[in-house]
Image (cartoon, rainbow, N blue to C red; front, side, top):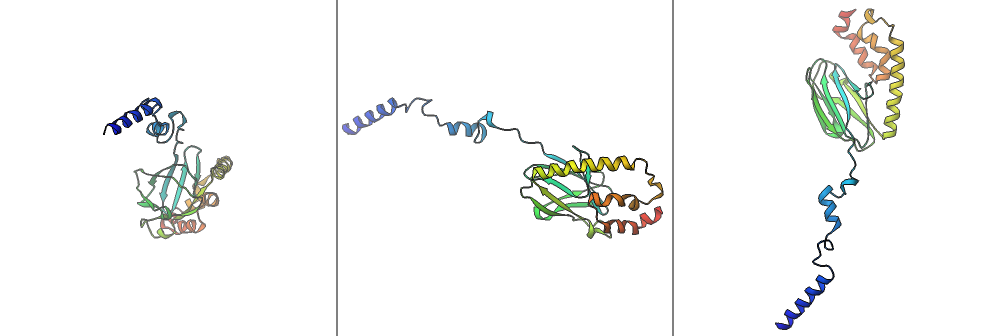
Length: 213
């Protein structure tokens, strides 16, 4: 017993001499910055990028996407991969439902009210955007495409749209659409906005369009 005690005292003394009881010597740097920043020193933490805001408006029978940061308006949704997206969703006429089947995401689009959907796309590709709420006779054609692009591709697309839409605005200032129906006025913009011609034809055939003629 005495021998065991002497060995224990000797081992303790050696451990202490090597810095075993020295607070600074016993600190684990990994534990320190893990506690402070979940694996990173505070000065190494980068500010998270602001979510990209996109305003989504559902109308019979199309989706209109507006990018408030740039003023771009599109009939197809373009998003950069790896960035948080903040969709602010509403409807211009009746109840719709914004649905991304491949993402398993769905949110109501309600007239006079704004709902929100926030997510981060993590794979480049093309995905379906569908209305999941019966919204009228042509509900089945209320579809468009989500393009998830690299940041460089998205930036290039955005700049192209800004230039093209600025040119279109200058050329349309003197236009007088009062004598034309809504579908006829929108026809020149359909291709640029990604709205299918079939949708415009159905709009022409609708009672509202007929009444305006």
